[in-house]
Image (cartoon, rainbow, N blue to C red; front, side, top):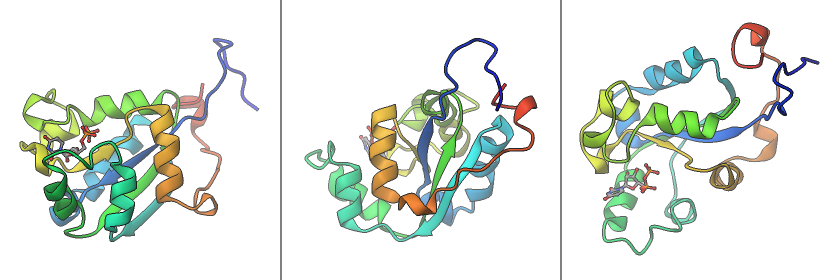
Length: 161
Ligand code: UDP
């Protein structure tokens, strides 16, 4: 296997990224996948699905009492979602930076949300916000058997030095 030059453990961190129904309807799936591919991250799970209210209430369990929650349910169940699991060093934090602020109008230029949208209730993409949250969400959205561990042939020049 590969040695880690910094002696730090080579953590195979994973996160859940989802293209929300507005992103699918606007045909942004390819562009969003492209951002994670070109960063050098590894795709380990991918599916198109109609999200159920039950899945959503578990996924957003901390938000079910918020005033915007009913609208969030309507939005997230309005059409198909593309759910993905991506893997790479520090991917949870990095993907949050790539996705940008929850409110696109406050997102940094160059982030997905700043580049593709302007309203908090149509913000195109989801990314887990902590490593614990990522593990919980991945278990919720994917069967373990649908996640693939595989070897990137270019890893020595991309993300796994
Ligand atoms: N949301 C909304 N109105 C708000 C806050 C959040 O519609 O005032 C939606 C928005 O789609 C957001 C999701 O609820 O992405 C989850 O909110 P959270 O605070 O977890 O933000 P995120 O982790 O997605 O950046």
